[in-house]
Structure formats: structure tokens, C-alpha cells
Image 1: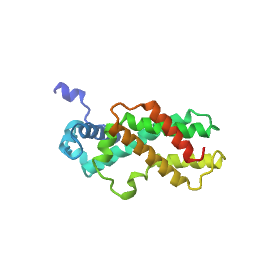
Image 2 (image 1 turned 60 degrees about the vertical axis):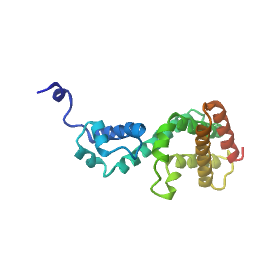
Image 3 (image 1 turned 180 degrees about the vertical axis):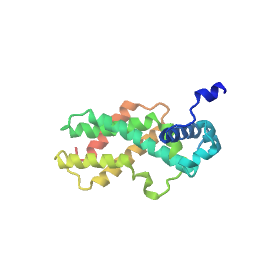
Amino acid sequence: MGSAAKTRPRTKPPEERREELINAAQKLFLEHGVGSTTVEQITTGADVAKGTFYLYFSAKEDVLAALQERFGRTLLEKIQTAVAEKPDSDWKGKLAAWGVACVNGYLDSIELHDILFFETRPRRRGAAVDHIVVDDLMELVKSGAEAGAWAVEDTRFAAVFLFSGLHGVVDDASAKEKRIDRARLGQRAEQICLRAVGL
């Protein structure tokens, strides 16, 4: 029995195997783009048989969707951590923290973001804004309104408007600026978030 056979486990939990496939796909997408990456390259990168891929995904597009979902969850975790650092009654601070964390979260992973979302088109029209990050912002705006911190008539509209605006600002800055001034961009994000709710 060779040393490789001794050290390499025969079976892994399904969640771990799926994550390895997703990680291999992310690495390849960043190196070669989504279109140029094959399922065979993904399985080679994950060190699994090609048939194993189809136990978890029906096509490469499913891996892309899983990566998009993971990107959204990771971004949301960063945002929620920043918001949680503010006192419960500091609604202004929470909303400002949401905006700054959103901007920084995108800037931290702009290359991956662009590969996942710009190289490919969303499967449906609403996919660009209909996700957990917007839902989280909507809940924050709604909770702040219920607490009397601000008056917002349509919390969904406000959340989509703010998210799309912040997203566009980051896209514009990364396309036009060689060196992004994060502090300035964050400060402007704070101001826009607060003005959007009338503060």
C-alpha cells in the first residue's frame, strides 16, 4: 500500500467534499474565468473522480450559484458583525456601520465578486437584488423605523436603493481609481445611508 493511499481518506463527509469542489472551482474561476473552466478541471483540483462532482452538482452553473450564495453569506456575516458592535439603541450607528461594512466587504473581494457576478448573467431578472444582504438591510431599516429612529415609508424600496447605490459606487471606484481611498468611500457610504432615511 503506497503512502498516498495511507494518508488520503477514502471517504469524507458530504459537506466537506462539496466544499472542496466549491473551493477548487473558486480557485479555477479566479485563474481562468468561469467560461474557460471545465468540470474536469474542478474535479482534478478537488482530487475527486468526475462522477463525484455529479453527486453534488448537475452542472458547472450549479457550482457558480453555490459560490455566489457563499459570497453573499460571507458579506452578510461581515456586515452583521460590524452592526452588532453598535449599542442596541444606536440606530444611526448601526445603519452607518452597515454601509461602511458593505463597501469594505465588496472591496475586500472585488476580484471574486466580478468573476462571480459580472462574467455571468443572473439566471433571472430579480437575482441582482433579491438576496440575503438586501433582506438584512430591509430588516434594519424596518426595525429602526419601528423604534422611531427614522421615518421610511417603503423599507424594501429603501433597502434596494441603498444596496444598489453602494454596489454601484464600489464598482465605479474600482473601475476608475487606481488606489481607492477606503476611508473617504466609507465616509460617503455612511452619509448616503443616513440621508436615505432622512437623517
